[in-house]
Image (spheres, rainbow, N blue to C red):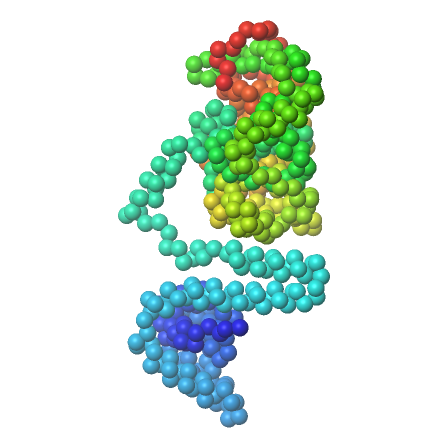
Length: 480
């Protein structure tokens, strides 16, 4: 394996030992193992000196290795004397700007070499576990971001802010819940949007809903499923996109509707009857579906669905899969959907801690890859039993909601479920300080998580949602 250029190591050691200003940067960023051979000995001792005295050893550098220099039979003594003389000569003429700029390359090279050696050691046993460990070591080092060397933003240059404001002018992703979209509560690149809901309350439907909306804007969506089969997720996408009921076609179905005023606030609840001519039970279902898929073939290429066994997907495994999709399939997601992170690979002995760490790492991954994240999480038993779930009802680890940017809580009583109604509450949002609730109409029978939505009036109660006006076949002029 090629050794790092001797002069670069010598330059860095010279700054470490003779420059209070630039040696401080080397002391903060370099580790003894980044150096090789005799340079490592000096680096180890100089770094200890920096920790104790917060300055370069300068004239005391020779004292740091006096045990070697004064040992009559130590064969290293002549080499170290030459190094000391060379460093003394270099300190006055060294190009500090160039050397500091090379520090990033040097640090990265040495860390990568160390990771390769560690991975090679792991592979010696030849087991499946050792292979995973080796992959984890390499993935960790390959995806480290050198944020320390990024100088950050300058207040005398507003260009990045103006560019960001231009990007926010037109929403890149939407939820289809009008009040949310107006308030900027939607998936965004580099952030997590999280839906909290009880078991069997439509979390997976919400994710396919967001995926379909992103697809309509021609955004590439990677949908990771760890709970449902990939075929079932595929069926839900088709069902929602083509409005396919689960029962015989030609049957009239009732659908709850919302009456909205000019401000899109709810002023009443009604019901309409609709007839659908295509269902999964139709005799010509196969021909119908193939025809509709071919019609939208170009659009449907924007979604990929991947199933992993429950508890098998680690963060490094996800990174590796994203790398494969990018390099082999040429598919770089704009949005990452995970259903759901709590059943990824976690430490069973420290579920709470590892859950919080996972969400923190996922947030970092979204920033690193410039993706929007749409995830779901279980409400606790208390939240499931409550009429209105709250942020504090998050299951397992409270730090989960502290990590994410937007948190939506799904609530539904039995009466509301019977009428195809549900409530979505904004409990946390980066874009708005206020909390508010919306009422939505749904039809899981035809794959629709949201049909209509409106801000809930203060007079609304879940008990009254059972009493609705019968619209019969009357057209609702205010429907979305």
